[in-house]
Length: 85
Image (tube, rainbow, N blue to C red; front, side, top):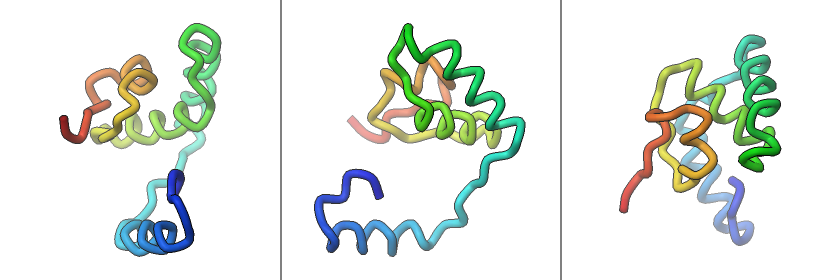
């Protein structure tokens, strides 16, 4: 619900997200996220949250639809997809 501009937006986001089962990090995904952070933190200024999100997409081998291709493409390559142009 990051980016919600107020309580109304937050409630609307939550009602949409509640329709899905959230993916959970595995130990191996957390370790892979730490490896990503070590590799890209200073060279690409990528933070731990992006590494954790990328680790889940990588573990599940599912595309991650994001406008943040600058950070996600180095982490997960072609799994990072722009949702629309």
